[in-house]
Image 1 (cartoon, rainbow, N blue to C red):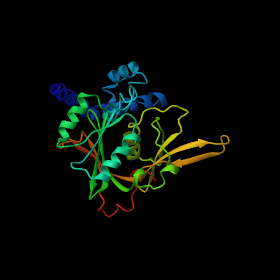
Image 2 (image 1 turned 90 degrees about the vertical axis):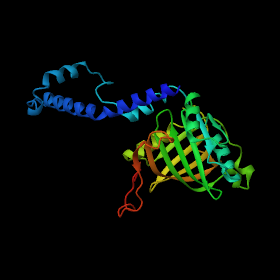
Image 3 (image 1 turned 45 degrees about the horizontal axis):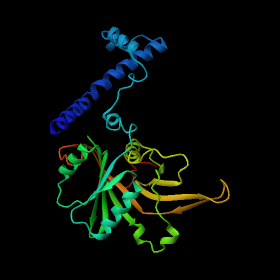
Image 4 (image 1 turned 60 degrees about the horizontal axis):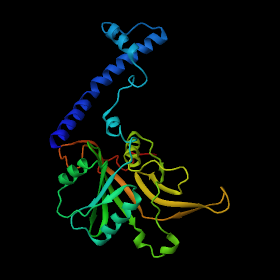
Length: 293
């Protein structure tokens, strides 16, 4: 199993190293296509390669014309089966953190929670690969308050690091009857204001934690971005007197997330390349919005 994982990782890194060459070849083909379509002469720098490139263009179809990236490979099989998620915490978790993770288990369908104990991260990742888990979620705390969420996609990454703010669990809400029970149906997702390239990447990581819902499910999960703070809300809706009389009920938990790092690898790989890192102390950091408007 270990040799197989090493071989698969090498193949993935090799495909990733070819992206620059494939992108350059794609740009050459695009220039030749544009010149032929507009009736213009072939660019001078491409005349020696024109015959070979035109032969490749003739053999291409809609699936091979645009080069695939390592991001496509990471989630290439995501639609073939439902996600399978492992939830765990930092070592020696407090009671509030344990309660929060118990509630997250019901938020994510097909999630399993384990007690961290003395296990090392690398052992957890290897065990999850062996048992076909698609994602690992680690929740951290500071003095009993959940303050960090790490989402690691398997087998090769990416890993997204979020700061947690304003966490309110179902356990903290006094009126349990008004809140109701938490359904386990697959939820509809609302992803609001993820408009930049980084926003698309973040939305892609979040949406692949949830399986495809049924059309008639009444459970809704919202990730709403505002000023790079992502608000998580969990609702169910009820129809009392027809389609125009909908009642929306929040069933918790609720919290805010702030992305601060994406790594091109799993959480146990310290040598993995950073795809994006938040730089909060730059002069322009307060003015810029990275994920959306």
